[in-house]
Length: 400
Image (cartoon, one colour):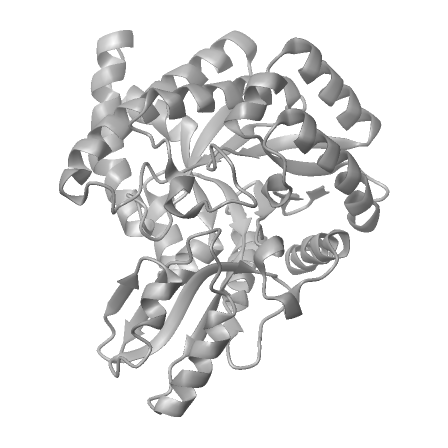
């Protein structure tokens, strides 16, 4: 929905259905009901997640026309898409496969271009369109080969920028790709994103754009900054103990735009030095230990260092480490809850970002992205329609 401080939506990656027919049925069930609770008198935007399989169906003109007609009928509109998960995302073990295929592959490049072709048709007139994507690759695949993978991925990202420039020249539609740093991604945090953007993307893009289109370095950098932006997933940045104001200032000072904010919260806990207390925390965290998604943990040590665990089970094995004073785990939890008894959420990080949004308009787009409703501990599971509506309304209350 439109607010004075940005368009607000939620991401449909919370809904199952990898084929378009299955996913569309779920959207027809849930979207009108959610809209009734959050925007009964105005149009409501949605953040559309379409799998690779579904995209091949939806790109067909008849399917796109039918979906567009349904959106109009229900007073819904699509202005952003989630292009991170390529394949199955529900009721199967996803884990690190969420990054597969990565940005070193033609499969990822082709899928993303197809999503932009879909968005170009669905996007309301006068709006720019956003698609978020993976942080190039997964860090722990071929760790000895990270720089080579990063180089190939960067060339493919530049190819997307060139494609989006062509779309805007031909159709007058501004679309942008938003890179989403994540713990253990090849781009893990704000500093790594900034380093890649300045030292890899701009030099590579300048070389390729100069060769193909005879553009100067300044012109090439301007093109890259228009079409390649940042997806600021608050959960991911909070897990990494990012100083939000500092990293946002550094990114904006380079003229890099935040294509969208993903409002999401992680879980965290202060680690008491007492063994009994830690055993109790271990039991609480173990309730969040499930087999579908990666739940990376970053621990802060007494010396202000960081220890990274690839998944929650790895952290649970190290629960008695006396040097650790805090855990933060990549498990998206409901935004409207800040305390789970012995553990808490990073809700304050979300509040901080939304406060900055009110005062400094970081982005035109805000997308609620709590995709874990199916795998939450049983005691936290709530009816989906009312839960999603409550999250959207909670964010709306923070930004108006």
